[in-house]
Picture 1 (tube, one colour):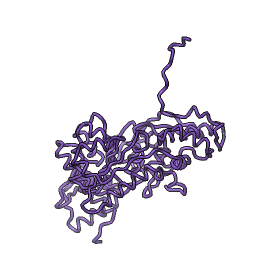
Picture 2 (picture 1 turned 45 degrees about the vertical axis):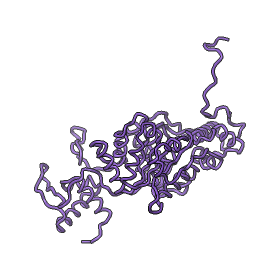
Picture 3 (picture 1 turned 90 degrees about the vertical axis):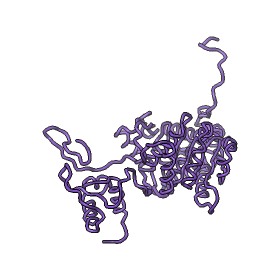
Picture 4 (picture 1 turned 120 degrees about the vertical axis):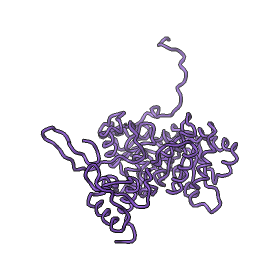
Length: 183
Length: 250
């Protein structure tokens, strides 16, 4: 096992600390890593004695706990690397008046996390689809951009699109299982 | 996510943004023993809040925008929320947790509309947070903020520097034009008139540039001069003059 921790292991470990007790699927969802990655780290931590098994939980999966570390119940104290979405979401939350994607791009584009006009437009559209933003003035293609306003501020972490494997039931026409959430 | 023109489409080169970035760098890199608070002040509309948002993104800082009705607890709750921490406990507990989290993450704290802190006599709590964390704390407020802070000796004495925001000038307009009026060349006389009517306000320069761009797109022009745009349509922020008659009476 490597002595230094990779960024991926850092992310997994911080999530494990935050969760307190966890199974592989919860860890994968919390750390935003693949299931295989989460199980790999759990296997290595078990081998090195960093975690202990707690037995099977209600879902029938093996649960674990970090040894010697109390769950903090708070987000990890390490700084999260700057991301374009992080910058854009921060800017959106702080712009109290209506804004256009141009405003978001101009104020979010930093050397560490460059943001283009197209990125800002796509992000605003995604947030509008998810009801985080509402359109104050519709765009007129080629003439002017849409004006948005924040409708739902859920906190400092940026909402983002994720791909999930779900169970879809054609009989009922709905998702019957959503990992980490309710169907 | 990057393209070639990306970094030129940022507000970073604006005078006030550059001034705030330089100020935060100065406070971050201060010599041992020097105070770690600073003040960025100026008239409304000069782009202080824009600069604060950009600086927050640049330095991964914590930015809170104070409101007039806030109490000490509201301020601590707002900072904790920005840090992603639960807002529980009394004010003293919150101050300790804010200080610890800021110190651990080495995140600068930027407080916009800091005038409200002085008006509500809450400024001492910011000093407590600074003392507990020793991270750069930047107070942003209106033109008279430095004078108001004079009253609080213990806060005043911890200021490393005071930087005044400047009105927008032609260099700012030239940086903003490609962002808010892309693909449109604005002739010098129109640019000068736009700047004059914006009264040094960055916000109005942006709005007026967007208006020129919209007019150019509607007219299908790639170059705009004084004759192409009714300068009376610029957003000046000036209140309308009183009417001599009301209701259409002659």
